Image (cartoon, rainbow, N blue to C red; front, top):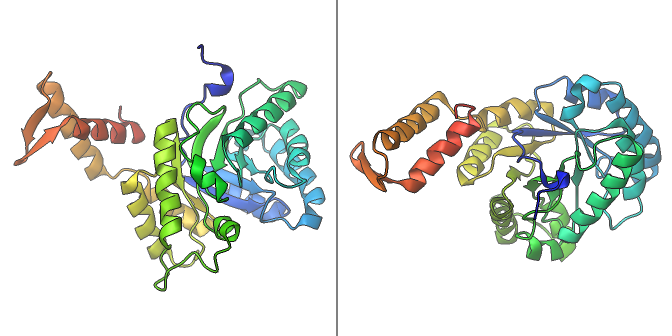
Length: 300
């Protein structure tokens, strides 16, 4: 089957995804003027229900007034299980946002429904059909947890991420944390299923927020850990978190140098399946990981 424009997006490469309330021009401006790879203008949780109608034109006008930044300016719309989704899309799509975040999905069908809505609005506003990419929050409902591996080939999807707060509400949990502050099993499972789902779909896994924006050392530790686990970026709720996230998800010079050595060793020994290196043995998965890191660093 030929690839359609809706499927043609490459996986997201953004490291930091900074939320900014859609009802505050000051906070949207501050977020845009910072170092975040993506600014997620929020029409969902950050905007009270009775303020959403006023926020929509603010978001539209803000994106339209900053065309040079448009690729960075994405919008988190409200989920399909409420009354706001179509009004959000109708308001913001004429401004041509860089992308859309779809929260609180119940499965792939929500993504396909969004694709149909976006296609109609793109055509109506003179935007190339299928050109608006999407990131999906895939763990915020109990039902969605059973569909985390179903996004392969889903239209427009360039990244998957997860959330713990709405999931806790969905299952009636009193808390999503252990006594030591770490996520309890169900939420660590959500994190694992998200990175597995992203790998299955061939898109980018993005880590959820760290709510304590003052503890930057804990943020650094967590970001570095999830990067080792396969995540390639992270959500932020405060501009101070962005430099830490960008650094954590940028390969170091030492990592790049080691990866290049591994690639060079295999290049010098074509056809081998395993080869000795620094007192150990390397096989083809080591080469694949080295090549992936070099691509991430823009060296391959």
